[in-house]
Length: 191
Image 1 (spheres, rainbow, N blue to C red):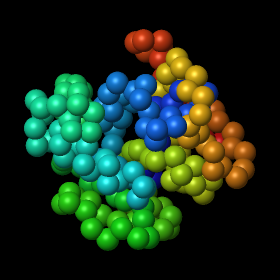
Image 2 (image 1 turned 120 degrees about the vertical axis):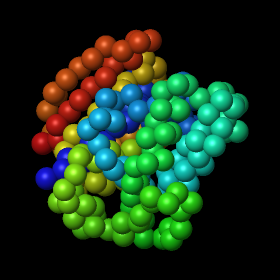
Image 3 (image 1 turned 45 degrees about the vertical axis):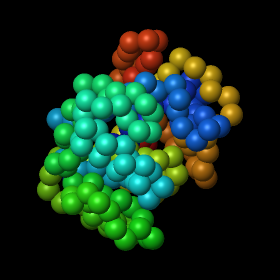
Image 4 (image 1 turned 90 degrees about the horizontal axis):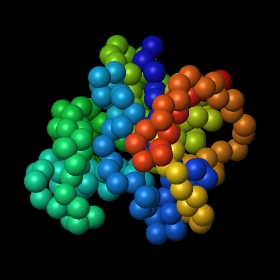
């Protein structure tokens, strides 16, 4: 069975967004979890997908131009992810969204369809969020691994990654890795 691997960038106090609705402490949204070679599909929630599609389409269309959302030029790693994302199937877990601009985007209407996707042959699947979908899929027992990049920052007010969790889940530490800028990469199995 394919593994569903969640990857999130968070502050030291577990926030994935600040009070303005985004993680202003993250310099790049490249895939920094070491997943690209091990995955062949991505899953997102309906709240995250429209902005994700807009951000990565801008990079795909003009990899040398500043991004309209941030005013910053994409990093080489973001350009590489943009190319990977363009040829990789994306699945959006949503009961309401009906259309996407990316041709390789499909919709999953419930957790049962995601469970069926995990049963299909292929590489692992990258769950890229957002927070609500990640928490609900962990609670449903569908997430096999959690990869976090923890930034050396106490964000204070903002959206906590696990704010919507209704039950306790055990984690098994599999790997720690010091990263540039005082960040730490953590890999957990979910008990």
